[in-house]
Amino acid sequence: MFETEFAKTSYIEIDNAVLHVWKKEAHHDDYRKPVMASLELLRQHEGSLFIVDATNGFEDTPDDVKWGFEYFLPELKKTGCRVWGFILPDYSGIEGEIDLWTSEIEKNFRVIRAKSYGEIIKMLGSEG
Image 1 (tube, helix red, strand yellow):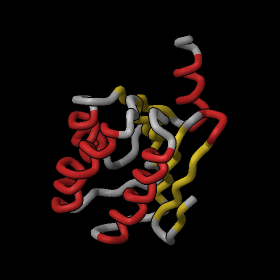
Image 2 (cartoon, helix red, strand yellow):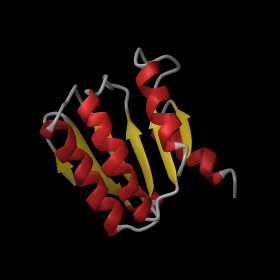
Image 3 (tube, rainbow, N blue to C red):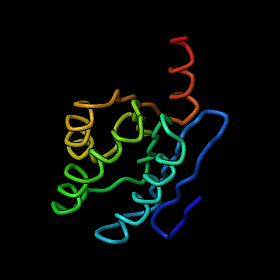
């Protein structure tokens, strides 16, 4: 587990999932350190799900988006992760940001959007 005032990331063994929870707006090192902690957990648990609780999400800075697209997503793909879950309300207030990330993520991962962690796990479980 890794936690800062900005985010918390943990591995949930029963679901083989890495859960990354944004607590508040973060940029640059405050953004990248928690994301790197999630990446490290994903490397340790090859093929795990990556679930981001963006309930307290925010608009990323252009350089954080660039870093995410050019570094994080290629590194995430190397972990064997195939599913990216977003925990979001029906309307989040950052739909443009979510759409931007989703369009890039969907190039290599399946994206599931739900209102809770349990909904994402249930959706995957019902596929059998």
